[in-house]
Image (tube, rainbow, N blue to C red; front, side, top):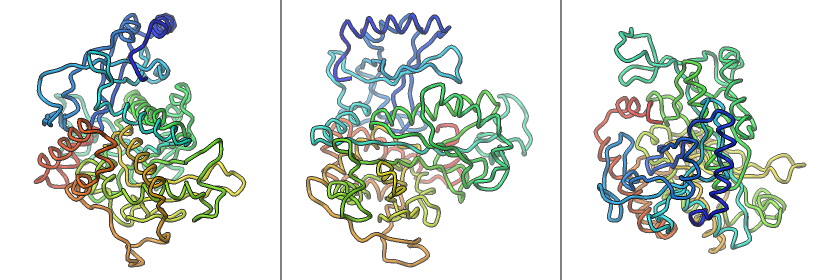
Length: 467
């Protein structure tokens, strides 16, 4: 949405409100994702939807400098009690929530009070970068993998749980739901109704699921969704996560998307798949470059790879993410690319020979503390720079560098190391713009300062209910 809506949009909102009311929908949740990667919300009664579309809903800009524990820092442009923004729901994404009866959802775009775009709107940033690609005749298609861990819900407040009762309560190890081996059918059988309801809810909301399966860690699952435009794909990432959360609640379970649930265990990723297109042709296939890439496709991926040490500050923005980003866990801890190499940060997937459209790249060094809109926009900015600079990919890497002892550099292994690269990236600073760049950096520095002396256990337990 480039500007607040005109009368036609308001009229459409009245029609949508009438449709929702006829379906017994009472409220519309409008979400945006802050610089801590947390989906924040303002909701309006269905009868107020048209008013929200016409005038927006007020919200302080201070949330852009909130940390994951709801404390706040400040930055040169954003912070403190002053100011107000207007949230406008995107009617094109208005969705009846299948797992929350009586509710609908829409992502929000944020504007200043005078109607000008808010410079630090993360969704607006993703849209600007997608438009920049379109101006170069390029189209990005993106899809997210969502990993989560299911535990038995914590006992009600005031109860007296014994040491075996689980959930995400701080200080106690969670009691995992769905026992069974990694990728085992046992886990699907044990949570058959739950997984069915996740699939049904996503289908009812128009989310095209490619696959769902148990993952490596206890109680862990993964769902992959079909590719879409960058902003839509980020919207889907938010909706998928909140849908899984809602289905879990209805089953008396708890879903956590935190990068690590227990120290030392394999964590939750939020991998991003992407492909580059021009005039209906997939530029990741059909050329004479590495693994059959076209020249623009190779340059785009080379730009991402070159910028990756700084990008990690966006894709793994919480200190806990570096407990996950470890070698030999398929987390993408190494600064390299490779065809079908799950240890490489950038895995290239040629796809079946008969399906030219399926070739894509997977960026693995991402977890769910990342804002999906920031991730999308930053990846596009890096890729376009690769094309502008006519970059080429280095030699691909095969195998696990931690085992083969290949001379492959690690990506940053801590948030301060990633932030050092981020501060040195003129590319990301220019793409984000000063207000968004400085607010994001302030949050990341504040998160490090807040948790610098935490043990891994304290760091992890504090996130199980936040993400």
